[in-house]
Length: 64
Image (cartoon, rainbow, N blue to C red; front, top):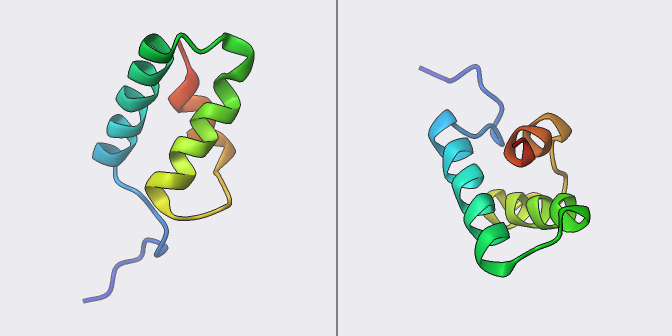
């Protein structure tokens, strides 16, 4: 049975991992807020292996 999800879809669990990793990176690295988008985008790219970063996922990962 084939999945209806695109090949590059990530699970809710993966999203939570990304969000937790982002928050930890910001706190431990003392990353200023104006650099959060670049940091989160790179984290998502590294995790997914895709250069394109979904803007909705990026916004969700960075939300306070």
